[in-house]
Image 1 (cartoon, rainbow, N blue to C red):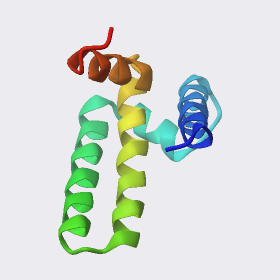
Image 2 (cartoon, rainbow, N blue to C red):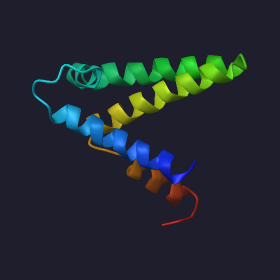
Image 3 (cartoon, one colour):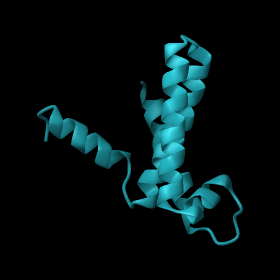
Length: 99
């Protein structure tokens, strides 16, 4: 993953955060956030299963597509819980012995 890739993930987090704060925006993101944590968590689970199936089937294009869906829904779930990718990265670094 290059810097441009990670920059876009941070940009996507910012977009999701702004959609959460918007009042008149009728976006899919806003709809997810309005439906609440249980619904968003269900979507994360569905996307994870779809990703796993695509990977087992060896369908690389679909694996990328489903992976993108999973990451997007994960970012929405994190935002819903006032968390971000930096929190996940910090946990992974701590597990790897970096602080």
